[in-house]
Length: 357
Image (cartoon, rainbow, N blue to C red; front, side, top):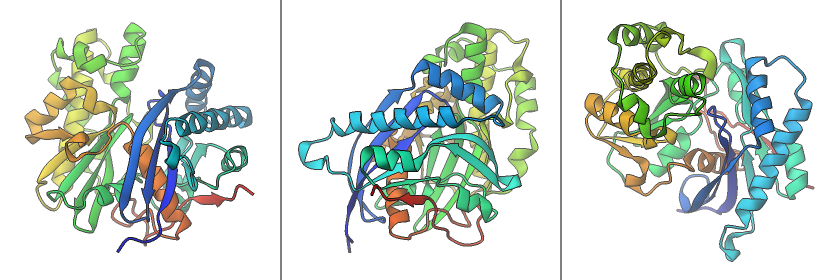
């Protein structure tokens, strides 16, 4: 039975630093009754540059950057609301993830830039932010957080279903009925993006075209896949900086791109070793699903893989939708992280709710 529904906007700024994803959902915290197409608003170049510098050296004073980043998110929400149907423009809640500056769960510390108070006051809308701190303080990995939304999307589809989110870092969610298992699998697009930026000035390998012209260096790939992270039992999580493209140095542009792309695919494939049952389907979301070379590599290892659109979902907006969904769960006092997804001792409510007035 459907409970009272709330309309929420979710905001996600991922490890790729390409901009702000904005999306809306209507939900009772368990079922999703309506979604709107997502919008991506690029960061102003100065903010992106400052953000990249802050991530490389996260111990400075970033009050001004946090203010500017928050204001860009506020502007993105205002822009997005104008794209919604007139009868859907009233928003009950905003779920504001912010941008991860540093994530060190082993030290029980995580920090996302983003001022929820400033956003609530600017928009006049109650805002939930700082989603990860409660989980990390309780001994959880603080990631991944989308699994509870994946479970909502998995109602009525073939299971077990595995959702693979390929952003800067890749993570999976295994859903079988009410049961969930989730963990980071390894690098997503980050290493290939870094490789392309360093060697060509381009921010990414569009459609995997450069990797498609290269040859995988098996020795380098084996070295990358020998990282002890892959043998750790889930739940487990990563920071964007935990892996480096350095082992590929010395390879040609094309061979380096191919090898690092194969590393992303191989790391995702390794995740299957830690699942209780063979998945009925693999559903790919995040920017990585647009990389034809990566998708081909995954299909060679895993069998058929499908973009998330195959079940009618929006792969570009899914994470932003997830934080809208989780904001409603926070409002209702429902858990957003679980022992099987982040390793917390018990299901936990997360996020801080700030009232607009």
